[in-house]
Length: 225
Length: 206
Image (cartoon, rainbow over all chains, first blue to last red; front, top):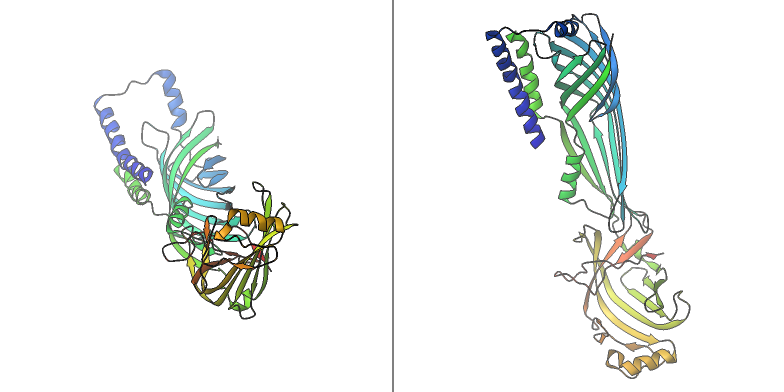
């Protein structure tokens, strides 16, 4: 929750910071060195019709991403990611095994603020994520292998995803981006099954908190062509 | 220029709202409902060794056909493999009545039951054991003899005080989901409600 508040504060403050920087530059004409000017020209070229592709690491898994610049400001993109986790642990004679499988296909449209001077591409994006997310967990008794309790988790297959980010295309074609996204309109169900053990309220809330993935932080690296 | 920034406002609002997924939960109780039909018959525990004392114990529970009587026979052996008998403690309970499911402080699902103590006896199986019990005035008695059952109901023997005859007896039964074993409560560690707070670790199999 603290992270969410901090992020919201930064995001809310960001446009004002940008305005402040622009206001400063209006008063004093900026002096551009010749060697910097050539690089800036490369960065600020019109990207209409260009494409790019690459790999990314995110909260929702590792995947591939591609995009097409419909105009200089608008990009249509998509990505596919996957993440499987399994863990086992336990205490006082019990074994806990948890497994989650997260596969996501994301389609989105981006709008770039190309006219900003300090960056190649601050962007906002919105799209749909198609999810195949599920998870299971079992608690068994070590000594007898008897099933004590289990849990099953399912997420709705489609959510709206919006986000903001920053995208830099280097003069030699390398493309990097970071973005912070949030899902909206989805649902998930958690089904607890009690065999020999009841789930305490504390265990339930802890489990529900740790299996909630409302936001997705993405770090991307690719090539623009 | 200003219009470009306006597109960010709804995105920033949605991000800061931190919506995520709506959560719905359900809980299924798949714990076994203990019945008299299920209990009726003979349940045997595995041999449990006590390496410190170089002895072992094996307990057999017999529930009557209607499961309203329970006979518990716990045999102590002078070796680690349940071969040479030392002594036998027999506990018989009458008017056994199954109660509701309950949960212990460790969140284990149990079924309560109550009964009336019919008798608790101790039988030395060898003369050596009888002599040892007599030497120690075990349970305050010096009349122990091999092969003779003596009631110890209501007596304090070592660190254990046994229930008196006709005393109310409250205990717990735990059954695994596969219905292959049962466990009983540790009646030497009772809670304020009169039921055991914990369970014995040994399992009884039919």
